[in-house]
Image (tube, rainbow over all chains, first blue to last red; front, side, top):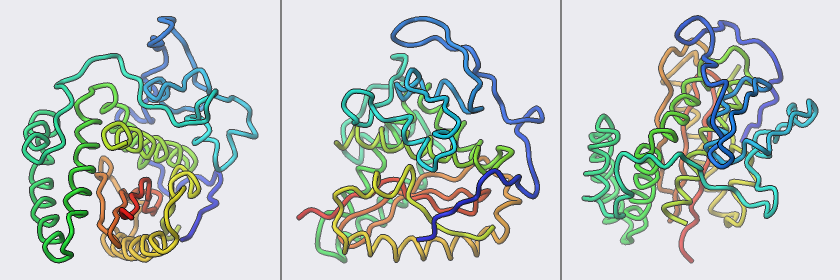
Length: 199
Length: 85
């Protein structure tokens, strides 16, 4: 494994999102619990994504901690238990959580992310082949677990928006640090969804 | 930059409790993914796509989820599922 220490080095060819700079459209947000509007531009990352993760109030603005390689993971640590929180969402769901069966997940994916259906079907074929080859069902379990997590993200518009926004900004932010921050948010959102449906 | 792979948010966070032989197999697969990504994107810093999808791989009776961040020339491993004992 090769860990990186890439610091604040500007990228050789900075690119920008639509409108010239990475979007910071979400500056004033409604906290899901308190109902109070909050503003923060400290990190240049999506405040709403942090709210979705239920960690908005935990945001540490200390410069040294921000620069720590692990600052992003600290954002998601539960203040009381140290456990990782599940995504907090505003309650809107395109569809209820489907059962963890291939048919139910396929039907759900057709609604929430139809463009990924071919990939899912290809994965199902591969998982079946792997199961036959290995003589066990773990490839089928992995297939179900992964696609259940994908559907869990996509069926909630706010979580889906935060996920795709961070995945975009992980590739289009101006600095390496910003890209890494967004890549970490993507990882956390997937992990949270995975735990919610497979935990 | 050059291509590499990494656990995010952190190695200890993602791999906690996973058997070492399983993690060794994950490492081998992740190295392969790095080589594949390097060949596919050549210069990741010129990437102009919207972001790559989360995917998973079966390995040593378990699995792991990963995604590629071309701009960082990085393969991120964010979830490992150990084989059932």
